[in-house]
Image 1 (cartoon, one colour):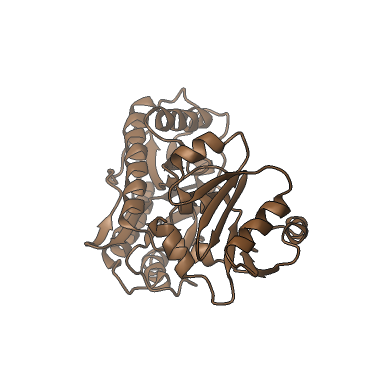
Image 2 (cartoon, rainbow, N blue to C red):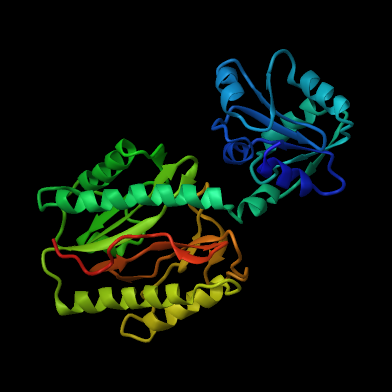
Amino acid sequence: MNKHLEKTVAGLPANIDALLVTNGRNQRWLTGFPFDDGYVFLTKKESYLLTDSRYIEAAEKEAKGVTVLQMTGKRSEMFADLCRQNGVKTVGFEDTWVTVAQLEGLKKTFEGFELLPVGRLLENLREYKDETEIDNIVCAQRIAEKAFEHILGYISPDRTEIDVALELEFFMRSHGAEGLAFQTISVSGSASALPHGVPRPVKLEKGFLTMDYGALYNGYCSDMTRTVVIGKADEDMKLLYNTVLNAQLTAEAAVKEGITGAELDKIARDIIDGTKYKGCFGHSLGHGVGMYIHEAPSVSAGGTTPLGKGHVITIEPGIYVKGKYGCRIEDMMAVRESGVELLTNCPKQLIEL
């Protein structure tokens, strides 16, 4: 049994004898095997990965700490046998991820056994990353940083926003990323005022170009945003950019074990609201990052969880002037065993292209 399995079994409520895991990323976190067509079934005696003939050979080679079983015949009979072998009477299920229709199916599959919801049990366990997990996030981030260095030489007035997004994505995939952490944002000119704008098939507009993107590496996400200027920045643009940068650097300097997301959010927000851009920072300061691009803890006005060892967060203030332009700068930070670490290693000075 690997450490993630051990951590989960130890964390099972006393009234739950086994846990059925159906969410693909939680399955991967538990076993190291990337698949989403099957089950991971944990009991206090033994843990199993059940899948069909399409994945069985790969699972036998890659899954760690579990007994791999091929699903044949009726699933209800397979699970009934496993429950009897392990003295299981109650089975926990991931109610956060299970639809009403799926739950009705589970009731038939586990007829004769009691199904109990476990809420966000696995998400709460995954919130605190171990050092190997943080290293995976760092590897994803290094790929994204290389993409940024590359894209600076690619950008020209003849490129479109979609061109820039696709080039970032292609570069990351061809330099070690297994996929994208999320859909790439690449918006210029007046569209940069949209925090989550969609890349358009239009040539890059003069002014701010905001690129928010990330790589997926070994199941873990990176997240970074850089805003550059197409052409020359005027004094107002420089003021806006430097206000965002000041808010970000000040919040990053305050990151420490024990501080809450709400406290960090207030530090950055007070700086921006103390300028003529008051009210132009609409979203939260940041969020947790892991196997999902948005995870706990919250780095927002409602973020009450104190930062602790294993937390990986983003710090990403922004200013958005409706109909005109906007700017966001984003880094990732971690509270590691060795202390607080800035995971992003990428220039933040104003770049004019």
